[in-house]
Image (cartoon, rainbow, N blue to C red; front, side, top):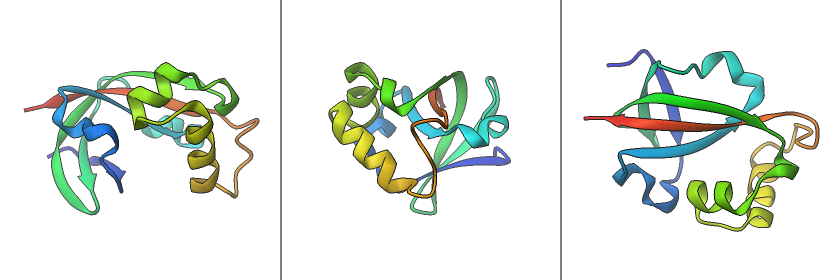
Length: 107
């Protein structure tokens, strides 16, 4: 099993049924998420499967677009901004980068 984990509390958009899926993570953990590395995908503390990071793209929350918000969480950009701000209230998401991460499920 992969040594690093990516934890989820909700399976937005039923993404875990897809071979490729996305997640958005705080940019201050940038060194943790590395292209080509494998991760144990955990949902509410339960191992689901392993996945490999295919790509990592930094962005600012104000630049989230419909493609990103709908593919990742099935919500509008405005709803996505509200969700991320509520998840990370201690951080200034106007200036701190987030990471848009593409993963491939390893079966």
